[in-house]
Length: 121
Image (cartoon, rainbow, N blue to C red; front, side, top):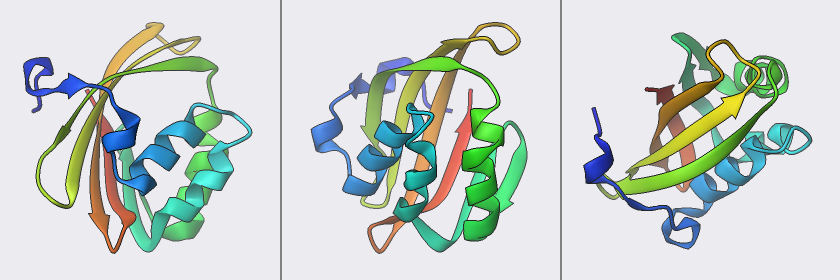
């Protein structure tokens, strides 16, 4: 698990384009669907313990599950693990159970697109 002391302050200009574009789109209810274009065709997302594989499943996640609650996201840190893997820390506050969640977005890229995304504490 990535601890907060392993992170540098959030700097979107230092992130790969696909990661920065996803993070920008995911915080906008209208922009979430446009985030699909930064995922590879065989990409995988794991969110809240559920797996979504391929564009059709990820599209469904972006437009329904990921939009189920209203929340704001504060991006607080990041870390480059290696050339293809990045971790971004975020605090979500909203109308979901508990109201506040500290999450890590763990990205793996392939050919400049998101190949794998795991969202978990």
